[in-house]
Length: 338
Image (tube, rainbow, N blue to C red):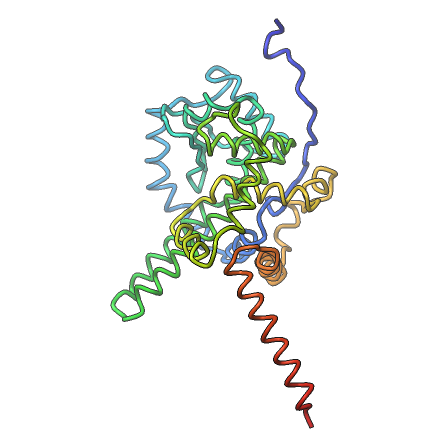
């Protein structure tokens, strides 16, 4: 049997100078571009986090987890460096593996973010699936999600001053809901970064199937799994539409079948192929990114999602809009302006 380290690695396209804007979901990217314009806030947050929270977090994992390098988890280290090379990450964040039975990985820290993989996740994934997860977390680190999420959390806490007002609680709930909506879109961005790191849509799909099932891939069917996403979006009546809104309100991550569905759509629409062909935003142009254009892109993303949605509530609103448009046209024809 061939030694593992001598097995040939499937060639991947190195995405030189790739900007994180490439993989960021339009709704995520619009928020990030706007926040990046707030010069000074990010510097202050980085320094305060570096002095307090980030030091404590890093010491916790330095003392209670395993730092991945050439000597510890060398296989994971190789996959990590390869994912970093594909995404052209110039300075890899520290990577830790911690003993934890939950399937999870996360990126924390702002001045110097680092990545943590739970042991259960590594035990349940093969090398290519692990590469996808590592790319996902590198995407979070490169996009600065931890930094800007902290900024939004601070703004959310400041809004607590509204609690004494009759509408204060509703205003705070709206802010929390908006924050969670952004977080869910940031996870879709991470999935796209993971796909660009592994460059195999089938691998990305397998990860979502394993996350949903606890790793029982041999008992699953790809077509049936993807069909669940379609059914989730379209099945039921208005009661289900309301329930889905309530279920998502407090979720920081999209559901696994929806993540798979969204990533498949991104591939099918051709953007993934365009990127691996070499056509993508470059990081040297990040400072010139237009906030107004990204806001328009975010609005278009939501508009397109609403237009194609088969959710009963979305269909009702579209039908009402069409009906009102028909009434307006009828009135205009009967009573033309003079």
